[in-house]
Image 1 (cartoon, rainbow, N blue to C red):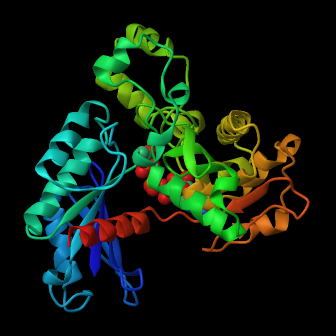
Image 2: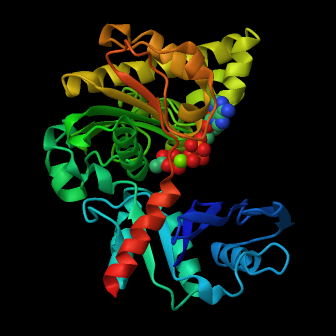
Length: 401
Ligand SMILES: Nc1ncnc2c1ncn2[C@@H]1O[C@H](COP(=O)(O)OP(=O)(O)O)[C@@H](O)[C@H]1O
Ligand SMILES: CC(=O)OP(=O)(O)O
Ligand SMILES: [Mg+2]
């Protein structure tokens, strides 16, 4: 069975084609700058050379058509025919309270995802474009949706409600949903397997720190709290997102700077975070390079990022009355030894002790970076959101039969 996984953003579309007989990746790639001139398609067939193609791709339907052409291309393809694709799995960022797990795409599911546009205006419309584009190109193939929010539906009320008038929850579903759920679930399970422990016996803090970043407290194998909120803006300092701030800043700045709702949203989501503090980049590689060169704004950006992350780890240890395992994952968590080192350096009060040499080793496998004496296991576990989507898709399609 072959499953195509699609992760659609507003101007990009990532894809991976899996052969689920052995969970191998046959090809993967990315279309960037959709809707702009000079869109870029990068296609990487496993075992063959990567190809890059620049053309004007005006919308997602054309983007998927181009991807499908590449998948069956004589030179760069990995399939004899498009008919070989048995199912398509889509990442959808916001599933609200309606979706507690992955689902087959039906008319009703699509209506529900549309109803959630209000709660995730930056994410869900793009996901819907991906779904419609895939349906247009592969009309007879079953399609599924896998939600970032689903894993967090186990949070208790005390963690997901905000201390604002309850009518706002009743009328508009204003509450914490949390995101990156496929990643938090995958790395917490993988961590327990790696340690050869039952996940039910562990208190785990998973740190998914990529471009978007969130932390989750996992107890008894389920999410009990997470740092992102009603939208993926709350919590940690991210590449271009502010994370937590005093909510009174929003009306204050809107008033002083005469900003519209869209403009203030854009400021907090796209022009804040590491980018705003450093004044130069949202990428942790540039921030740590700048810090190494003694650049003061890059140094401040790093310090603020690390400080916020460490405070959240402390608060989740408090939430669970302890922590057995801390897991680092995603772009920064998997690759930045200095972020891991600096965070852990200040967690000695929890009994955290990392081995600086182990921490520097680069590898694509789950690995331990704590010392044998450490009271908390500290692990680096590469995430694989696409594999979770492919597995869920396979399960749902098999259940249909
Ligand atoms: N070698 C590296 N060292 C430090 N940070 C890195 C490295 N590689 C990637 N990153 C960070 O990871 C981010 C991308 O993370 P990723 O999880 O791939 O994000 P997303 O899936 O949200 O696009 C980059 O913006 C950068 O900050
Ligand atoms: C939900 C979210 O923040 O996603 P990403 O990390 O892909 O931006
Ligand atoms: Mg991501």
